[in-house]
Amino acid sequence: MIYIEFDYEYSDMPFFDWTTNCFDGRFCEEDYSEKIVKLLNFMNRDNNVRAHFNIVYSSNNDYISVIPRITTTLSLRLNSKFKGFKTKDEMVYDLKKCGECIDNFLQSESDYYKLDFIVEALNKENDYKHYHFLRIFTILEMLLLNKKQKTHEIDNYINPIIKQIYNKDSDQATILLRQMRNKVGHGDFKGFTKKAYEFADIYMKNFQFDYSEYSRLNWILLHICCLLDDILKEVLNQKFNTDKYFQMTHA
Image 1 (cartoon, rainbow, N blue to C red):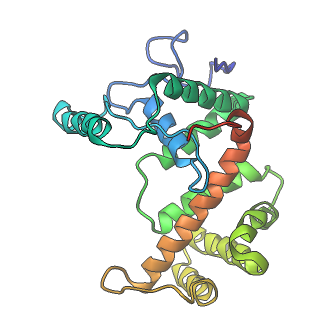
Image 2 (image 1 turned 180 degrees about the horizontal axis):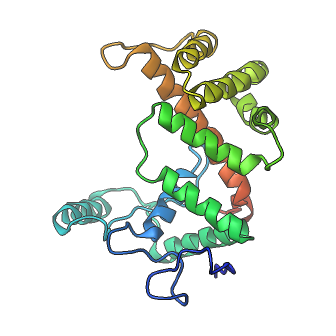
């Protein structure tokens, strides 16, 4: 059970009254519960089995668009020879475990607002451009740095994660990512492009650029945004302590 004591003077009252679930939404807002599920699905590691939730019915979509999703999911389960689909009990178990992860993170009112910021920042975001880069880096700063720390101190936290990818060259990759964040954060897009090309010259030597699909800069942005996503996944899993709650996962 998630319980946070709020300062009512500054908090946004839930729908109806203060006894209402704080995750309840308004008529013109998306269901908050689905945003939470999207966050949990974002946190899944590609190299590890985690709880993944396939939203079949969504109150955020119109009735016509929901029907094909339901029928497609049902036909897949009926016609597929795959035997690894989770049972209802397994899915409920995983959902409860995810709730425990959220409870583990929510220790204060400030943590609630951080969670809300993360959920909204990651909701329906798939445009891997400058804004995505700055958005993800901002979340990393919020999670890893306190108010008295400088931006460059984030290197100490994300470099161990980057080192898993680039080994001995991780230090330079970490510095370049932070420098790109500073450039775009101050509107210096010429400086950002210079640093991005420098990153590509070092870490994307074997990358096949198809210029019929994207420009060179947009290929680089796509790559580094995916890299930042991977870093954020690791940080979120650490902050939510998912390894504690998902010691055993379903095959």
